[in-house]
Image (tube, rainbow, N blue to C red):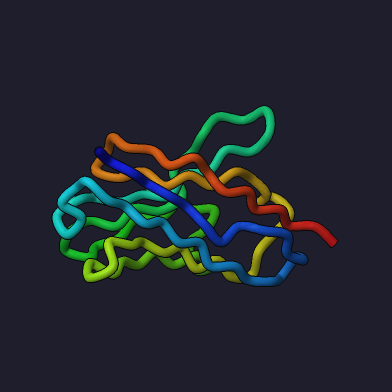
Length: 112
């Protein structure tokens, strides 16, 4: 049974930082592409960042230079370090494993 579980969301002020974690089980994590997506109220879900098995990464233009995706294969976990957060980063953040399996999401709210 595949499980994808996000954690680390919360309330942060503009300019602040958060680190999201996503633990996956039931997949061969080390060879799986892992991704972070987000969905703001009234908007479609969008890709934020991807990391492939060889650690190559891809980012949405809106987060380049501010967010960093990384993975720890020993822990079957992918991370999203978010710095210089903006109001428009407010969304539910979802982790997706192996192009197929979604987590339940974690809320990130950027507010003063």
